[in-house]
Image 1 (cartoon, rainbow, N blue to C red):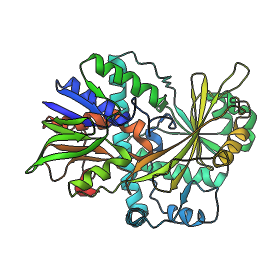
Image 2: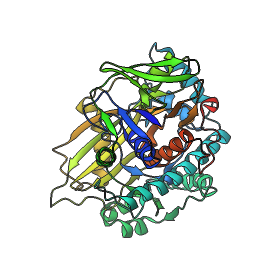
Image 3: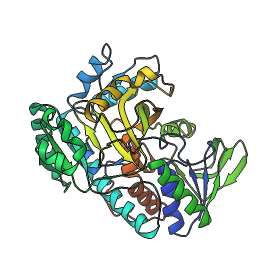
Length: 416
C-alpha cells in the first residue's frame, strides 16, 4: 500500500520504519527542514519504563493550584481564555483518583516495556549512533518521607513486571560514583536496572536516513493543509507543495494532531504541555553522572549524552508558546549544580523549550476514528522516546489489519 505518515518526529519516523519493514510504499511529510526538529529535538533522553507513572494523580490538583503563585512546582498551570485548555484540564482532573492513576500507569508501563523491546529489535538490526546507554537509571529522593512514598507507589508498576530496586544512598553512589559527594543529602534511591537512555534527536535522524536508503520519500519543508475525503475514506493529503494520494494515512503530528483531526470532525484530547531543557558541554575536567536519572523531590531529570549532559524540568500548561528566557532555567540549573557541581560547563548552557502532546490520562491514541484508512499514533506526552518503537509497531500492525502484540484496550480514540 501507499502510506503517508504525517510528521517526522520520533513517532513518525519509527512508524515509517515499521511500515517499510512490512513492505509498504512510504512517504513522510513534515513542515520542518529535517527530522526531530520539534518535541523530539532536545527531550530528556530517558528510556524509562520504571518511570511510567501517570501525571494525573491525587497529588496533581494541589500542585497545579500552588503553581498559580509559586514557580518551583513541577506542574505549572497558566490560566488563559483558551477553551481547549479548560476542556483538557477538566478531563485531566477527572483522572486524578488513585484508582484511575494506577490503571493509567500500568497501561503506560506495559506499552513502555513493549516499546523498549522493539527498540532492542531496531538496534539489533541496525548500527545507529545516538549515544545510547544501557545500565539503568537512578531515581533519587531527598527525604525519608518521599522515599517511602515512592517505594509504595512503585508497587503499581511491579504488578506489570517492571523491575525496580530500592537502594541506600551509599549503594546508589556505588552504581554511579558521581553521587558520592552528595550521598549524605539523599534519603535513598530507586534503581531501574533495565532502563536506558540516548539522544532521541540523533536516533530519529539516523533512522530517517536509514528509511531513505530503504526507499522512503521524506518531504521536508512541506506544510500539511488538509485531508481529501471520499465517504469514510481518506484519498489524499493536501499540502502547500501540492496534493498526494494515499491508500492509508498515519497521523503522527504530536501537539498539532488535533488541528488536522478537527477538519474531520474528530476531537483529540491532546494539549501541549511545555517542557524546558538545557544542554551543557562536558569538558575533560568535569565529573558528569555515569547514568541518567531524576531528582524526584524536584522533578528534574538529567542524562549524560556523549560529550554533553542534558537537564530537563517542568510541565507548563501554557498553550503553544515555545519562547523561553534564561531565568526560566534558573531553578533547574540551581538544583543540578547542587546535585552534580562538576557535571558540565554551567557557563555554556544551550537552552530549549518544547511541547509535549499530552492526553489527560498520559496514554497515546491508536487506531481509527470515523475514517477507515486514517490511523492515529499520537498523544505520547512526556514519554514519546520511551514509547516510540512499540507505538510504531502497533500502528503498522493496525494498518496491515493485524492484531497488535500487546493489548491496546484503553488506548484508542473512543477510550480517550
